[in-house]
Length: 217
Image 1 (cartoon, rainbow, N blue to C red):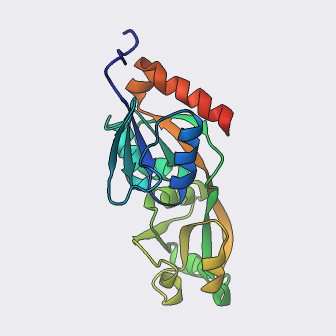
Image 2: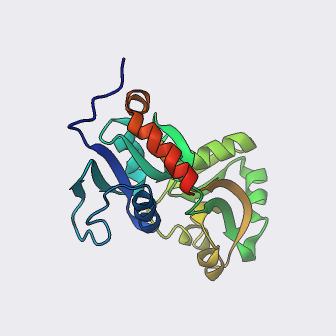
């Protein structure tokens, strides 16, 4: 199949809401894309600019948009890619938005999780990221019960609902403020430029943008 006809079509790009948003918009601007309106989008989610359509998307949903062809390409945290486990092509590590997944437990109960595991043969882990957590403990050969939560997972071990948590952190401040201690690292994450497999294959603009972004960072 030949290259896609781009004369009358805009390149569709998803931009992540939240922490990665400002640097992502800045990077696209440096690459020469028309980012009009993205500096102050308000509640607007789609921008039809010269040669490009920008979709402002929740980070956890970006792999879905890319994999199913809602957009041609996007910027997305590595953590969201791993958790979603969908078919996307990772084209460039952009380096910013660095954070890591860690295992943490209450400072006043260090070692209690291992004691419970020796007695019961299973450990209960609270997390917002069940796939990443399961893959980590599978590698460790530890049997776990995963408690899926959506917020304030620091409370789970403090009230005895779980022995440990797996969570994402940049500085560890929230963990320390809740008397939780990091006992292991699970995964490091940075922003990635990713593409839909078909778009990467047939649209030279996606590959060209990937090369340009990699140089800019």
